[in-house]
Length: 322
Picture 1: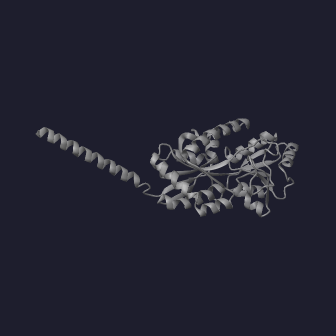
Picture 2: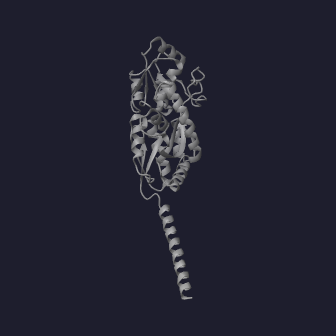
Picture 3: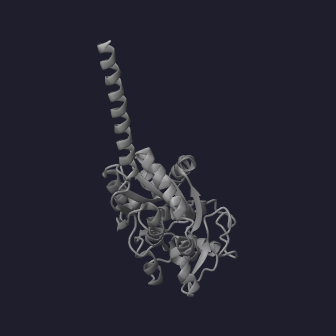
């Protein structure tokens, strides 16, 4: 009888101990975040990636509960940031402002891993990558630019953010589909517009948020958009498909973290950014810079990434980049 009583007491003590441990673990998990998180931006200060990245974390901080520390890590069309993030611990305190560059940098071989080397939290939205020229350029249509390039093989240069970037890929595929021979200049995100306006390049492939203000000021003009539909803000500018060139590449922006991050942290971050994209301050910046908010959670974004990865690989093969 005494042995049975001791056994019951042992079991009761064990149950209480297990329950206390589970509760303690639950409390530990619920404390995330306990400190600020580094927010890596794959391009230089002043570009659209930087502007939108800083805007999204500013809107997200009240929901996150701690601050974000934006850190620009430009280079290699996004490769420098992805390599840095790849080497960081998966503790929820390193967050990347990813983009289509996660597919271009991996497919072109700028990094030794594929896009699925990370956990991808959500897609925030996208923007278009038009081909633009100076306002005083002699071409008013993309067809006229193509004709000039064909008349002077290798004589015209198109600037981009860097070899393997989405802007480089778009320009290469445009050149391939239109049958022109041009020079692709990796000016970098911070120099591609000045290089265009200064005459170093004759055209540029650039996110709409960056070139838009120069179009409005009368310093530049857009020849075509590599989108399925016309850009609402520029209804008179045709798509490349309308001009006869089958080029459709979309620049998305998203949230990624090192592989192996706790699913509960992923859920937390997914909800944080879901709420952030609805904040008025981010809506205002997005509208001002021509960024289309189209939020996708983890599951939908995983399917989207897989499909886009195939398209990017095919586009690179078509452009001779791989």
